Length: 285
Ligand code: A2P
Image (cartoon, rainbow, N blue to C red):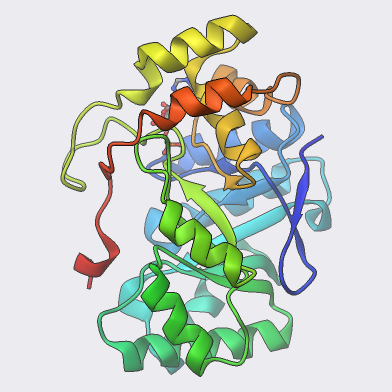
């Protein structure tokens, strides 16, 4: 059983979910159904820009678990920011998902244009009040972006989903989130995919083959991926590892029968290089 984390509005999110970035429609549909029916996941994280909302919806409907037992997140793409365009984009996401509400709606990236960012948030507040998103939040926010929303908004973000893994532990943003009752969620929690053309790195994932993580895993009969997922969970973070492979989907939720020690935590802290795999939010406008 996956623990739940409670938002500032009382809504609860399963601490571990399935990510589907860069997964094709076919893989997404299959992975979502498998994760729910065969592996016990109850939380799926997609986005408009992933292009697979419809496939997520199909996978949800093929599963045997009722809609209200699954936590579904999607995200507003940058081009749709602004008050009216956000409302229209939200309707379109619901339509593609085939749902009449979602559990969490996120602004995918902050904008350099503060006025437009705030208009977007105003539309998010309207969506939250309508009940069609049970909670609203942001992704890729630094403390200064969050401060703007806290200063000018009427609803505080429930969550901040940021790039976070042992190379990028994000201590400052996590401290800000904690101080303001905002849950922190980790994307690319395993260090991301071996992708091309994204971020400064565009390099193979090294964390999955890291010798320290592998060694710690061996001591527990677990893989480096499972050690990282455990690290997120024990840090109180919400985590959404992505995989389209059944064996890995199962493996990534099979992390509730061991615990990392304080000493292992200290050793993992040495992996902090500050190296992002994605973009710096301040350069993404
Ligand atoms: P795949 O879908 O082919 O399994 P992230 O850090 O963004 O969650 O990315 C994880 C990447 O690592 C994905 O590209 C995924 O690819 C792969 N992956 C996910 N789980 C595991 C695992 N348990 N072992 C090895 N690779 C994994």
